[in-house]
Length: 357
Image (tube, rainbow, N blue to C red; front, side, top):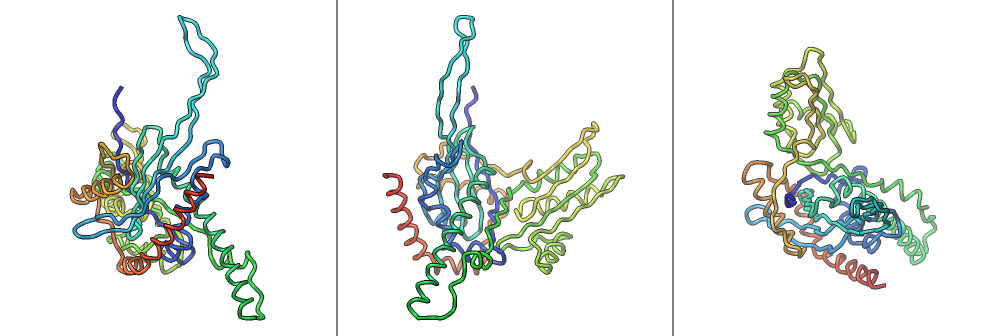
C-alpha cells in the first residue's frame, strides 16, 4: 500500500462582522472562538464530534526578517468504524465490532495576512470545508458570549453610575454586532488554472464571485473595476457572469483566471468542452496550491514553523504570491499583542481545568 503523504494547503480566511473585520474583534470573539473551553472535546453535541486540540500561539517567520502572529492547533474528528461481517475460512460471519479513531489536521491562522495553512495528517483527517463549518459555529458561540458579557458590563456600569437609561436587550446588542461571516477561499495555482482553460476546445461560461474580504489589495486588469464597484455599492458579494453560445474569448478568459486564481479574494468557475467533446470545468478548488510536508513533527510547537517554511517555499518558487500584510492591521496587532497573549494564557488555563473535570 502506498504511504500517505501530507500536503500543505493554503486558503484566505476572510472573516467579517458587518463592516468590521477580523482585527476589530480579535480579542473579543476570534481568540475565544479557538481557545474557549467549549471547543476542547464536543462528544456530547453530535454523532461525529470535532474539536480543537493542542492549541498554541506563536510568532512565525514569514519572509525575510518578518514574523507573523499565528494561532496553531490540531482539528480533530472522531470516527467509529463498524464491522458487520468478515470472511472466515470461506464463510461470511456476522460481527459487531467497533474501532474508534480520532484523525487530525494541523492548522495555522496567520492573523496579519489572514492566511490559513492546513495539513491533513492522515487520509481520513478532517478536510478544509469541515474546519470551515466548525469554526463558524465556534465563532457564533463566542459572539453570543461576548454579547452576554457586554450586556452585563452595561448593567454594572449603569448601577455604578446611577444612570437612568435602560440597559439594551440582548436582541438590540445583537443588531449592533452582526454575526460572523466567513469566506474560506483556497489559493489556486494561477498558471495551472490558466493552462487548463487554454486546453479547452471552447469556453462557454466564466463566473467570478467576489466575496467580502479583510484588508486586501486589488487584483488589477479587467477585474479591478468590478471589485471597486462592489466596495462602492457596499455589497457583501458581487458576481460577474459571462456566457456565449459560440464560446468566449479563450485567451482573455485564461488571463482573467490567471489574474484572480492565486489572490484568494474570489471564487471562479470556467466551463467549456474538451477536445473530445466532454464537459470541462475549472475552479479554485481544482487547482489548489499544495506543497509536500514530509516528516511533519508531532509536536505542535515544531509543526507550525515547518508549515510556515513550506509556505515560504511556495512563495519563493512563484507558486503563489507573498501573503499581503496590511500596515494598519500589522500595527494594531503589534499594539494588541501583550493583551492577546494574556487572554490566551487565561483561556488555556480554563481549558486545562475543563479537560481535567
